[in-house]
Structures are given as C-alpha cells and as structure tokens.
Image 1 (cartoon, rainbow, N blue to C red):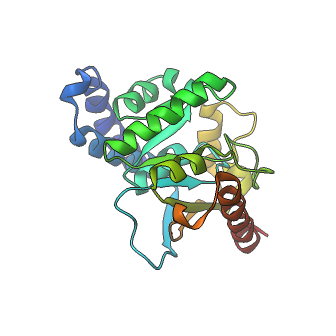
Image 2 (cartoon, rainbow, N blue to C red):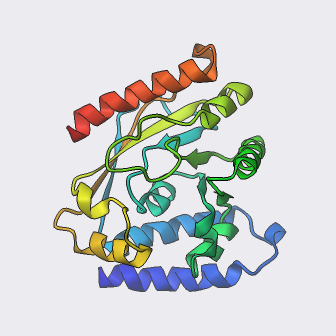
Amino acid sequence: MLLGWIELILLGLPLYLFSFLPGERRGGWYVRLFRFWCRAFVHALGVDLRLHQKNLRALPDRYLLIANHPSAFEDIGIPALFDVDSLAKIEVRDWWLVGRISVAAGTLFVARESRSSRANAMRLIEQRLGEGRNVSLYPEGGVKGMHLHDSFHHGVFDISLRTGIPIVPVFIHYESQQDFYWGRQTLPQKLLQIMRTQNNRANYYLFDAFEPGEYADKRSYNAAVYQRYLAWQHKYLE
C-alpha cells in the first residue's frame, strides 16, 4: 500500500503541473496518464479491483457507459478500467488537487439540482460523443444507497436514442458494502474507511451493450435497462 501512495504522488505531481497547460496542448497523453494515476489511487487504497467480463460481444467502438453508484470509489474505479470521460457532480471540480486534474482530464460536471446545468451536461456529452470519446455516467443521479434507487433518470437513454450510440452497462458490487458506501462521511473519512476495510474486493461486472434501435422510446429503454439492473442486484447482492 505504501508503494501505491509513492506511485500516486509521483504520477500526481506532473499531472497537476501539466494541468496548467492550455487545453489545446493536452491531448490523449494526458488522459492516459490520468488513467495510470487512477490505477495508482486504487493501489494506494489497497482495493482489489476486479473486472468481470460477462459480455459475449466486444465493446462497441463508441459507447455510453452506465453503472450503479454506491460509493465515491467509482470516480477512480471506472476510469481505471475504461477509457471514458466521466460525468461528475460539480462539487468534485473544487476538490483540492483532484478537481484540477479531473478538469484537465476531460471530466464533465453537473449541478444535479439545476435543470439548466443538467441540460447543458447532456449537450456536452453529445459533443464528446461526436468527438469520438466514450462517456460514463450514473443514471441513478448520484449516490443513493447501497442498493439501487427507485428509478433511473431518462437522460442517458434519450442521448442513446438520438445519437444511435449504445449503452454499456457495468454492475458494481463491493463485497464489504458498508465500508465502501458513501453516506454522510467526508471524502477523507470515506477513503480512510476503505483503506481499513476487512474485505477489499471490488467487483465490476461488464455486460453486453444495449442497442438503442431495439427500443421505441426513452421510457421503455429506461425500464428495460433498470429491470436488468434489478436482476443483477438480486444475483450479486441478495
């Protein structure tokens, strides 16, 4: 774990310094370095991150990645495993060090309680997809609990239908759910609890993409995907 923190610092310092370069001078190399940094962060926290490839087909060339969102850990776990630009809550932008690096790496931000911010985030997601990037987001709209929230928001399904870009689902299961679940703790408190967990296994289950052409509208699309997530929850959590 100590080696992980040394690695994290050695990668984090240049990432932070390079974040002051003009945006047009940062290319794919910065995103690749950011992903290495996320893996170092996983190592530093002592988490045993496992990708379970349950998909029978290869990943699409471009995709929207969705996942359930029980913890703060997904903010590094998802980019550690997938080449995506993430959508995060706007508060992340102001986090010391991490915020500036996330901005420079192409993270998108949304004020969840603002309708105009949500609409703008959807436009930016479509723009990134048009530029050839993949984007990850959480249809629950934030950390709602250890188990799935009552419903998913329609936004990602609307984008998928309008762009024709498929949705790749990831179901996340932390074997020590209580230690990873982000409730009322501050971020440092949550990270410390993760480091002290007695079961450090994080399982990320990757399944075949949902094709938008198979659904008539965003509501039926949403309902079908949500039902699949309920089935995965029953299989892996209950």
